[in-house]
Image (cartoon, rainbow, N blue to C red; front, side):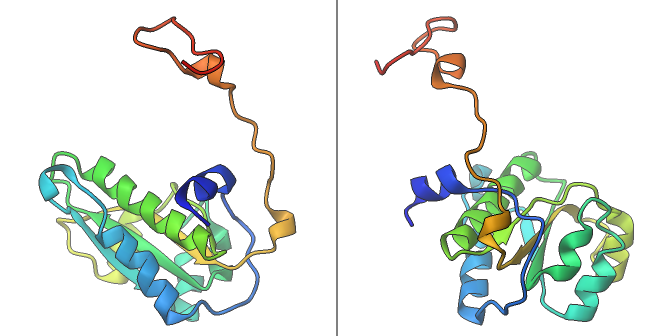
Length: 172
């Protein structure tokens, strides 16, 4: 699947099936995060890979909007250095790279935003100078349970040519 097809078909997955993800694919996913571009090539991130079932269950306590993390094959805790001016943007770019690479392999994910961050940092032994940006769960999923036909605004509602208000209706 090419990148555009991944973007067009990507959906958040919150229900996972059993199935181990091969180590080579896991490494490809986290490598996609490491290889992400960043402002001034600062690379303000570190990644904690969690593939231990007991730890994933425990992490469910800290991921208040992502209790489904207990079902996944693995998760990545994305840490960022807040001293880097663009750490949130750079970290988000790394997260999206990982999600897209996983999706290209038929592996779903969902950004977990509501996290008991300090408790999770303590549980994982993360140093105080780093922040938890997100937790990304990854795993195989039942494709019949994923939303299709995403509702999106039409191009003429969001595209402007050369100035705001000059709507692009049918190409340019």
